[in-house]
Image 1 (cartoon, rainbow, N blue to C red):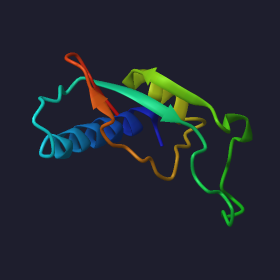
Image 2 (image 1 turned 180 degrees about the vertical axis):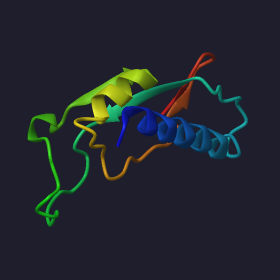
Image 3 (image 1 turned 135 degrees about the horizontal axis):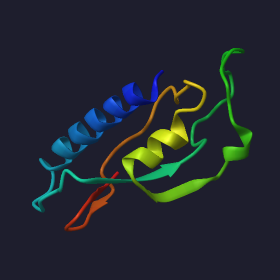
Length: 98
């Protein structure tokens, strides 16, 4: 996947997650995003032989990234994660943290 395609999907998922979360809280959730990325949080037993994993990423957490940083981190050699668990964690006046 091209990085710009991944970024488009990340933006859409961020918007939808924030839109949904705003139906559950009274506070206003800004549509300016920051991200916490926990790498290799999935269970990889039983994966397909052609799936690529990055063992060096085990237990690596990036607590405060911008959108461009997330794209650069997760889009490697035109590969992206099979799934991303995205949801609102908390909000400040300036950003919604996903």
